[in-house]
Image 1: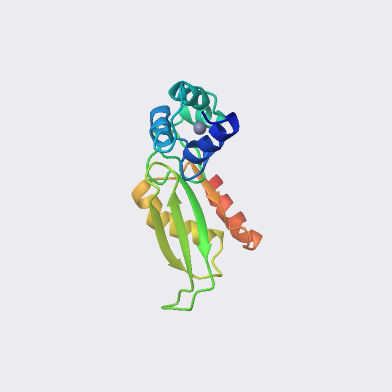
Image 2: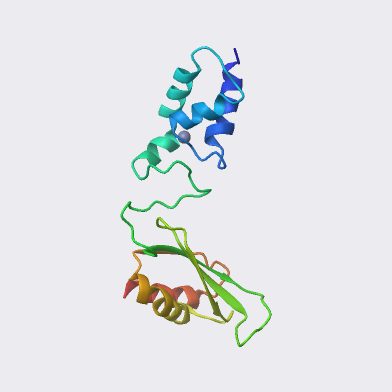
Length: 166
Ligand SMILES: [Zn+2]
């Protein structure tokens, strides 16, 4: 019979850890029983999962078994590229007039990513134009965008926000 501390440690491994991704009760029991077995184990784990704040929070949003490493909540019927995260990869050698890549990742259901060549001097309007040309045309206007362009000059963000607002 493992101690409470040992049980909790096991839960950290098979349930709480980002790579475990807060699986449902049955999956948590299945994983735990690969290495452990004690009297009342199913009930104990069932209670643990029921009491897991993270699971309670996510249950409403999705029934997906695996949780990504970091979660951005989306409505279940979110369309492709309605909620996105953008990042700019800079410091690349100049090639055909481009030395940066704008990445746009869908944070809805698909997790699809689009990579667009651009330059590291790109500003908000330029990013918005790339977005309009490559995403909007196919996927419609975004509901939310999460700008991760932290090291950018502020006009880059501002230009983009203006387009978002308009
Ligand atoms: Zn959980």
